Length: 409
Image (cartoon, rainbow, N blue to C red):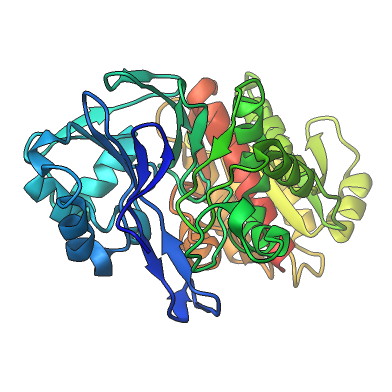
C-alpha cells in the first residue's frame, strides 16, 4: 500500500496497515486493523491523529518522504490512546514548528503519557474552529467516546468528518475506501460498534445530536475503511444501534434534602440511569410510606441513598429508613451514596459506611475503576451547594456509569 492515498484535494491518508492478528483490549483481531492518520497539505499543513506507538518511527519516516516535517503547523489529536497518539512523540520531536491541538483533558493526558511539557498546545472547546490555510477545521467534544478526552474533527470545505474511533472497522484493508471493499463491510462495522461503542451509547446519542445538521460527504475514521460511498448510511446505523434499550434492571433512589440541592442530584442520577435503560423510583423519604420503600427496595437491583449534610450528619429520617432497609436480604444488590454539602459533607461518608457494612456491594471509585475502567466519576458522589451545569453533567454521568455496572451484572 502506498505511503499516501488522496482522499480529497490536498488531503491524504498517511496511516499504517497492521495485517497481523492484533492484540486489542484483551481480544485478538483476526482480520487485523489499520491505524489511520491524515495529512491535510494546506498553507498550514496539519496532521490528524497518528498511528500505534509501535509504528511511530516508521510513520515519521514515511511522512517525511511526503512533506518536510518543519512545515507541519498543527497535529490534531482526537483521542490519546496509544493506537492513535502513539506516533506523536516521534513526530512532534521532528516537526519543530507544530502545535498540538486537543481538548483540555487531552493535553493533560498527553503531557502525562509522553512528557510533552515543553511542546506547544492549542486547547480547543466544543464548536471551536481553526483556519489551516485553505481549509477550516471545526471541533466537537465527544467525551466518553470512548474515553473522557475524546473529540471529533470536521473539515468544513471538504465536508469530511474525522471522528477517530467512531465509525471505525477492525479490518486490515489495503483498499481503504468502503466502495472498493471485496465484500459488504456492514457486519464488521456493526461488530466494531458493539465491541467499543455500545457500552457508551448515551454518548453516541449526544454525538449524533451534534452532527445531525452537518453536511457530511465522507467519514475518515482511525481504524479500517474510509466511508465515502454513503456517509448517511453509516450515521443512520449508529443512530439505530444506539437507541435506548429497555432492561429488566431497577434502581431505587432515596434522599433527604434540606434546600432542594440533594433532590436535584437524585433526579440527575435518575436521568443517567434512565439513559441506560434502567427503571428508577426516586423517593423523598420525608413523607414517604416505609412499607412502600421496603417493597421497592426488595425489587430493586440498586439502592442509591442521598442526604444533605447538617451539623456533620445526615438529615431527616434517611438514617432510620436506611436502617430498616438494611434488615432486608440485600445480597446481589449494589449500593451507592450521594449528597450535597456546604462545608464538610460528612453525611455522604456516613451513608457510604452503612452500605459498606451491609450485604450489598458498595459502588465506590475503586469498584468503578475495576469494573468499567472509568476514573472520571468519584463515588460516593459529593456535590457542593446546588449543581451547576458542570456538576449536573457529573451527576448524569454517575447515573450512566452505575447503569453500566447494573447491565454488566
